[in-house]
Image (spheres, rainbow, N blue to C red):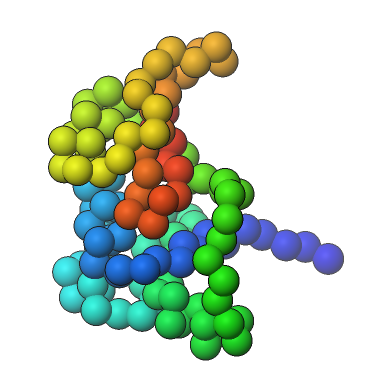
Length: 122
């Protein structure tokens, strides 16, 4: 049996707030998507999906607010410091300021509007 990772889904409380954050990372998401219950974005052969809590409730049959850190998204970017400071100046929460990681990458972490950790690295 062969499987292939095709999409990563994010459950969002407020679709517009979440999409605005990911637009700041350069994702091309049309403004009319702000009112949709499900949105998908193509990213280098994969999809990043966004579902409202109401949509997830209809799929799962219920919704429980997650507790603890389980997954993060990591975005390769040219200028980690610049992207990090741009996002935090817009009011998004910085989780860890840019630093030179021991594995050789410039690295920083911010939180999206739903509290998901989003790594920025170069």
